[in-house]
Image (cartoon, rainbow, N blue to C red; front, top):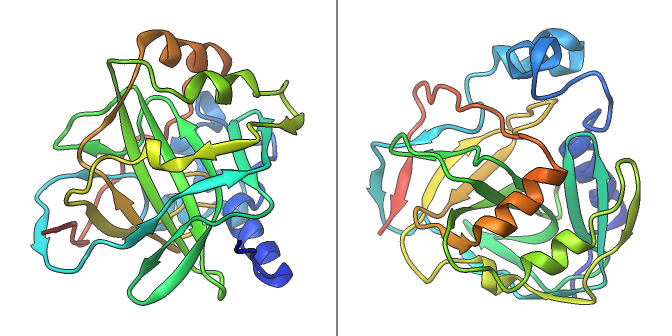
Length: 246
């Protein structure tokens, strides 16, 4: 079982959520994404940055060896927390993560967005899940998977049933197989970007699957009934390359 060191865990937790639990930003109105950069000095890169996420994944360049080696296996002792911006699932000890460019990353947490944040060739999806992983030196690599409406997913009811009240936390599933959230082995998109919530730090290596997995209309509705739209709109790619592993 892998665990993040205390120092790394603190650093990563701060980089992922720094001020993200504050109530001074939202997904709508005067505190919505168009205004994040002006809400706080710490959020300035949300407006000024040139490597912001999410983006529309289009015009990808074929690249050998771009895909990470995924080890998103089973986790145990899942904990669930909820704030005004969404729901986060984490585990104290995991045997899950990925290897990217020879560096090992351990799963820190995962969470869902509705609608999807990334688009693929201009198309968005009903939901997207992000698996946030961290290396020992605090680098972040996030895996994004889209959902489309179809057959019920075997684990979503259990995950939704564990969602606590806003501002609260609690126990989630005793065991969860993350493999059921990963599409079959295939090419993936890769690009360099940012956190998709304030402070929008440009510190994330993104991997996004082009093929969605399925969730039923009822499962999607059950999530959006609890968590209203929490997707940041797509941002310009600027001069970044989007790679597609071959």
